[in-house]
Image 1: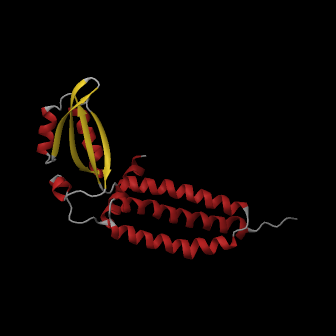
Image 2: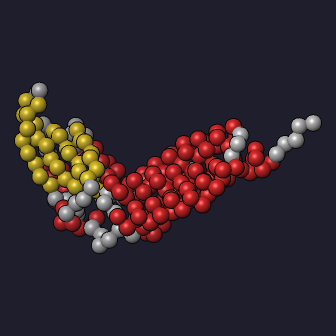
Length: 202
């Protein structure tokens, strides 16, 4: 009769999966802070990422000697990447440059931007169909969806591109989007509330 080793085939692979999910999730979110020049938060997450690797993964993998453990290691990496990306998306940390391209930027859009204290620059350009205009403005990532909804309502024919930026002068952001310092606990609390609201809606 073949004995089933619960530790080797269930407990150990599960611990590997949990440790790998935690490790890769932290690494993925840490990358967001590195790209956005948030050194303090990147360093804190890097510390816990390394701690999990040294204390958990290195010790667990010493005892891993079956296919279940290897599969769960890979599954944990994949799940950690996905979860980290979802958290990064919900935190929406940092700022972006939005480029709006149109044959003529509508005056109503300029009025909307001015009323909401967005600073913008506009240049004339040429494309294959003739003259066009490009408007540049800066927005917090967490406010992009609201900005785009308003853009669709005001100028549905306009095209746009969005690009992340590493650092932004404080004066370029609208007054209602300015904060003194990024607050990780506030961001996590906000993300938790949005996640809970989405769960109840579902």
